[in-house]
Length: 539
Image (cartoon, rainbow, N blue to C red):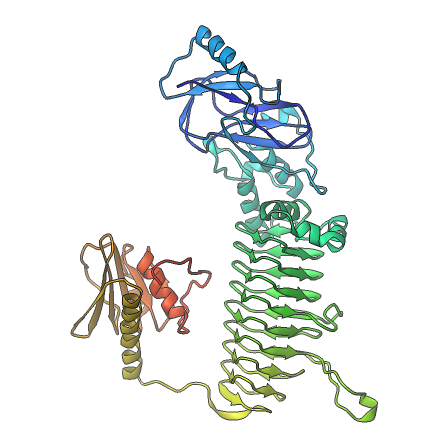
């Protein structure tokens, strides 16, 4: 059935738009989501995307011509449908008697925003027709970053270069040193954030991310900033899938983090320099800052894949350095400066950094005083006060904390094997408790778990990863305790393999794989690659 496509509502005060470029010829077919044409106002460019599958029967407004708001642009219909001149005239006459809908008959993607200083220069008409084909927003962003569009691979219809393609290229080029941008915000925009941060935080996540990028920040794909959340900084660089929950405020001179960093709701973060690794997680109501937070030496460096619990307080008046895979439990306090009575009266007073080694654990409500260090793999018990440095691999506790014993014990090979089997059995029990019928079957040294859910999902466990052909299943998951490299390299591509000893995973995965991986993560077995998070499912 023939339908009239009109100029949609664009949220602008202008009463006319220019058809910058048609991406579909008359008679051309398109699918839902394809870009049909680009409209331009004086300050913004918009892609009009198809709301459904169809065929463009007739263009009404040619490229370079202007059209009134809600005026007909084209007629589209079903595949194979024909439209005569008489039918077109009748259709337009009938349509003129109906009220134009603000949204039109197509979905609109706003490619550029024009608020709070995000101005867009009108692109010359000739430029829009140059090869390679690119959306105006992509073309403008490439110009800002000094990128040659000929080097960018387009993901749109017929290779059309879109804004995400340019951002992806920019990130890769920046990492390899081919791009000059370093995330420095334009001074006027940084000043605006400091003065009007609350108003800025009230904007939508998409709007905030677009504004940051417009004014110099480097933000990876998937960045999200919740209601009332914002970052005040002179330099801002964040990796893919960065997440701010609602009402999070971060203030720094220099802020940089790797992919998948997350701050849950209500966090307050303030330090002169902040460096976070990949997959660093900060729970709700974390407080970072306090006295001296913007001092010249105030620095917070946190490694990858760590966890900081609710209501933790960090005081980074001096360098607070935390390694990879560190757990800081809820309510813990880390102080880099003393407070109290006068040093001239003989009272202690100290300004000194804190260093936490890789793999450390800090218990609930523990307190660390200025200048202390925790060696790699050490554990500080809940409620303890650490006033002197502790060596690697030890467990300390008390007020003040003292050495109690080794943090871990050496396992025999048979003990490791038993623990591996117990992990599988406990996983099966947890699945059953959640209403998922899981069968466990021991065959010699091999333990097999089977989940029947739209087909069979099977986990096979042995000391050496089970090889050979398996049954035809939805998920073929094979788990070993210790794998040689030659075995690892021979695993079929259709098999998901987990090496518990090497803490690694490969293969296609699936819902049972994700649930088992999350189960292992909560028990300290964190598999590589580490830039992964559980999105929910069976557990």
